[in-house]
Length: 371
Image (tube, rainbow, N blue to C red; front, side, top):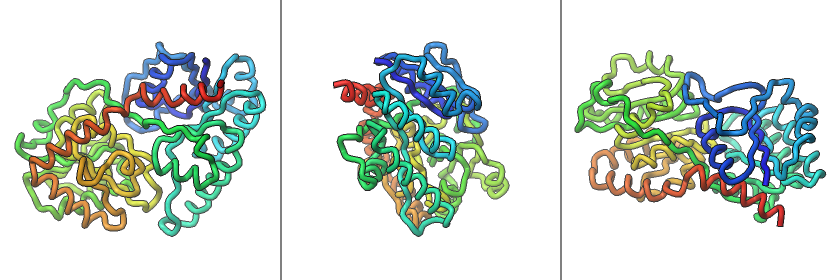
């Protein structure tokens, strides 16, 4: 079994998934349009000598050139790129139609799901309509939609894709390096008995970071701290200058992520629908793997799959973020026993979300096709 996987960025978590997939099948990975890590100011070990991985230039990534390259390879299955740009909409359409006729198994993986109408601007309506159109256009030539969550599954079914063409998978991100290198509490002057609320992600409007800051301020607890990790920290730092218990640290290298998760007491990912959805939010996986209670909003894709309200955390209403974030952060941080129970539940729930289990879904799709 040989799988060709076309991907647009080289993120650390997908690199690990490619490693897992390579252990199970002969796998060749092509990164399209030159090297990109997908996230600014993030450093990670980019060594991929153990993976059959090639980075293609923009010219090499054009549909005609890709088809010519792939025609020269003997492979069984092709994972086409997610349709998140004009380029990939056209490319995935051409490749899936062409190689479907060549009797190759065509697989498609993306966390996408549409927002409710009326919750964003007209330009988003148009973009969403175009993506929905292309999904319908390509549903015949794509054999299996590798589906990471219930929101994506529901979208596919509503688009007319039969259940037989969907294969659920664990959308995984594991912090594989768990050596603590940074004393977060000491560096930020946080006492050992003080509580830490952790946010990990881009500092962007749709992430709900402004609402998180507002709700945290309303808690009015000097012995509780909000630690904000992620790129785009400039404006937020100016806004919070002089506030001693809100710490904006900027981008964190992958080797140091463990230190921040290990220091925290609760993790919050409060997306708000104002610009777009959070298709998944893999930092939720990572936080749970460190035994943290988690709070996410209904605009956070992973919340529906990973959060069991009252068990390992809470799902808050994106229309009432400040009110509900304040209530549930206070509820969890004020109750040590509840926080411990929820953390243990997070560990149980996330234990199956491994790179190996994620990779098995792709192998399963090819096996089904070859029957």
